[in-house]
Each structure stands twice: as C-alpha cells, then as structure tokens.
Length: 109
Image (cartoon, rainbow, N blue to C red; front, top):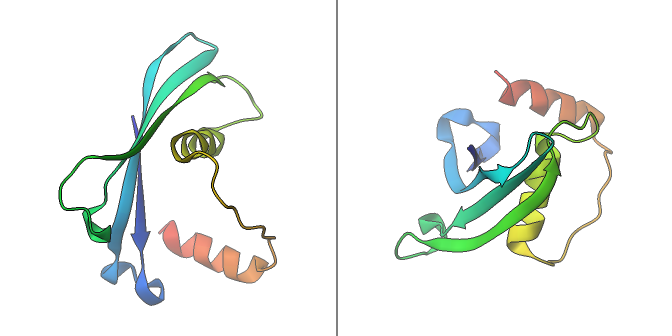
C-alpha cells in the first residue's frame, strides 16, 4: 500500500510541519503486467471534518506495472484523477529551476 501524506511547511521549516491530508492506494488485483488499485482520500479533520470517513474514493484499472515509461507518479496522478473526477486544473511551467533544485534538495534530507 502507498500512503501519500501532504504537509505544509510554513516558511519551508520542516520543524513546523503540519499535516493537511492523506490518501492511500492499494493493490486490488490484476496480473503480473497490469495492476488494479483501490484509492481512498479520507475526510481531513484539519479542514473541518467532524469525524473520520471517506471524502473521495476510486479505482485505477489495468495500470502498466512493468512499463519503463510510467511509474509511481503516473499511478498517483491516475489515482487522483479517478478519485476526484473532473476538476479545474491550472496550467504551469517549470520556470523556477533554481528554486526547484533548492527545494528538492531540502525535502530529501
């Protein structure tokens, strides 16, 4: 099972990290080449949920397990798309290479 945890680091300070939400992706069948996965995004008490429960859920079917072209980020994207459905997206570009490199280094320590 994969568990994705989203944290807010105020001012980039890991010592003040606050968890915002989680999601889980688990193997739900398939074969050696293609996997089926379940997806759940629980209600987040940090955003006003009064009790635990499911906020969104979905599935990923026939994900190419052995493909050299797709990986865990592709599985995560498929899981989010299938659990959240059609939502507004925002275009962007990689215009901050220096900042991106610095931040990537800081979160991997």
